[in-house]
Image (tube, rainbow, N blue to C red; front, side, top):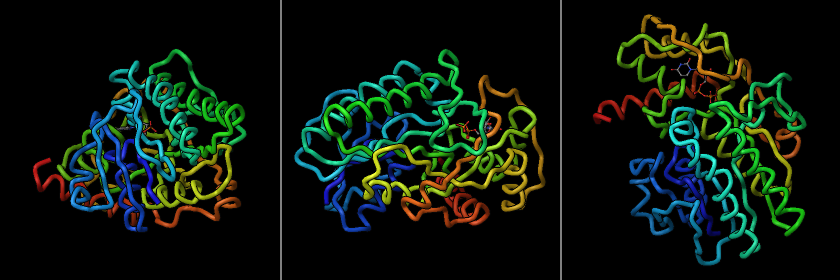
Amino acid sequence: MKYLVTGGAGFIGSNLCRRLLSDGHKVLCLDDLSTGQERNISELIENSNFDFVNHDITKPFFPEQLDGIFNLASPASPVHYQYNPIRTLKMGTLAMYNVLGMAIRMNIPLLQTSTSEIYGDPLEHPQTEEYWGNVNPIGPRACYDEGKRVAEALCMAYKSYNGAKVRIARIFNTYGPYMDPDDGRVVSNFVVQALKREPLTVYGDGTQTRSFCFVDDTVEGLIRLFKSDHDGPVNIGSPGEKSMFDLAEIICKLTDTKMETTNQILPVDDPKRRCPDISLAKKLLNWEPKVGLEEGIEKTIGWFEKLLKNGN
Ligand code: UDP
């Protein structure tokens, strides 16, 4: 099979490309390297089953016949997606029209990577796929949250009007090798700070929660969802809810660092709690995360140690 992976040089995208190649598929990786990194795919360039095209998917793209599309192109960390909110909205809208158009023309399935951010600062816990969310449409996170909500609406519209074969993965916080040390997210910040023996920057009082899924598990979930014929949204995430303070403790323990933190201001509209209900993924895909948080964090520490040693 030949798959298009947009955002294939990004964190989850590059892990997905490696997995598809190791399963024996051909991969056409598209990325404009605005937040994706060349180093994430450098070892794949020699592989004859791998093609890379530097392209901004908000602009039309006409590849040869493919067997499926995984749409991962978008800035995903708050620092990146808030840097140019107009561009982030274009990723949720114009890019989505382009990939859906491709899927229709080629009559192939398209997996859209949506996000737990569509639930906003949720008022229901844990979040099931039926929950409609609590999103501030004019806040600093709106460019990402509302963009991803429009993208889901576009998938459903193309499905009902054009018969598009869509899959929608609502991905919760994911971490692991090939994360960018500078993307400002909590796992990358804490691990890099701990390795440099700097105080960990805890935003707010550190009681806010997230549920962290190791990237190999996330990729497995995406592939299973792609192969299913379920065309509604499915949560892909870990149900293990942790406070940022818990996470800081785990990372300090695993890096053998004395825990030191500095408290910084909590970003506007930062969700207080987030945890997926993954009953649907379990039932439909027979999927649940396998890698425990400590095991996954250790692998992630290994990745950042290697980057720091190479001067990145
Ligand atoms: N956070 C933190 N310190 C950091 C970076 C983030 O305490 O150095 C907090 C942030 O305020 C949020 C949580 O960690 O409550 C997760 O943030 P991240 O940016 O990783 O992801 P998202 O907010 O998109 O879930």
